[in-house]
Length: 228
Image (spheres, rainbow, N blue to C red):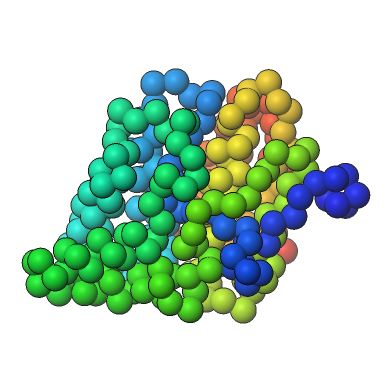
């Protein structure tokens, strides 16, 4: 249906030669929101994103990861005063940059927590699953119909599927909120993937979208075959 309507389909599994990458470290920005600190808002998103991927992180490790992310953006000259809307996709850090900074801090401080963060981040930054997230955003959702296909993630860890769904939904929400005059229709299929009582932020984000999308001249349909 999408192709018949001259739309675009992006495979977001990372299995098709680095196609369909949505960089989780690229700060989301909405043209319709004024006086918003987009960097701080995105750091909150990243807290949830990494909490989904690595639920076993303790408070110290979470704090060190947050601190490292803040330092990473400063290294890329991205601060709360930066006009995010003027940055190109390749001006944002990627996961390998985060891994490299953790490695640098590990060598300087000799803290075991940095070693732990490196070990769990390695698969998605420089290891076998790097094609899912490690790269600059290369999707262009300017057509009237866009499909973000996550079906090829079915064989992956549920944590990876949940994190990617959350990442894609966040990116879709950025697109929706760019122009309040454009009529939009969001269909979120297989939404049970996001519903996890251990990570309530994902369900809360979905609830926020459903409650708020009317403000952006849109409607949302949440669909699932798994009722919990």
